[in-house]
Length: 283
Image (cartoon, rainbow, N blue to C red; front, side, top):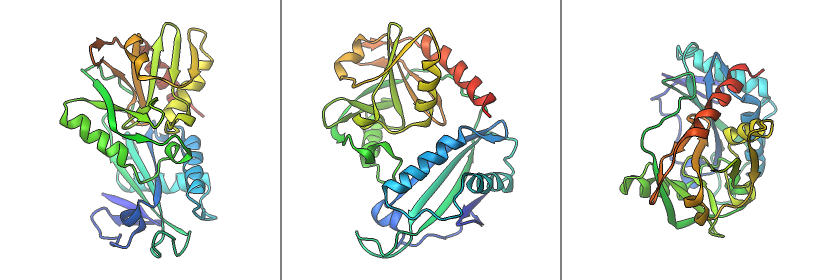
């Protein structure tokens, strides 16, 4: 397998990053993860704009060449070089500041790496297996602009993932410093109660998820549901009719259990069909 490093194809096992790399030393970088399917990058414009926004938040110099078309061509070229053009693919695009300096960088210029990984299905497939979650209360997400971008310093998410693994949960719910739900380790949370579907706002520390964004836009056109971006207290969860998680690779993942309550996946099942339709027929 190959990867793309600053526009050049390299063997994936080639040593191209040093111990002075700022992503390694300080987590000084951003990334974006998107899905390639139906021989196109799904929701590429949204992913591109999120990546550019993250770079601006971290005060990185955006190269003149970083147009949406150029980066798309770079990704597609790598997918083809790896023989995956007819397969579903997970694409990770990582950007980090060039080597030099301490906490104050020597430069704001950047390097980048693009990686690919083959996926099982071109469609978003609903996983109806047991999926239990619990609150992670050891550390909190700060509800600020940094929480909304996919930067490379994700210790709260990592520790939440370890907590879930050690306690036999499939995921855990991250709280912000106001003790409201920010999201889950690897995505956004949606809460269904009656015909209302609720998700935490970005101002509560929710990551600016692309599937979240697409789903909100889709739901606002659907007469069946009222969609609300509002703070969610942990106390609301056991009163909910249904809970589900979203991210760019899984699509929609229903939560089957939180504490003593079991949840169905009726709404998630109907929405994943809508999401697949939007993904398949996007321009």
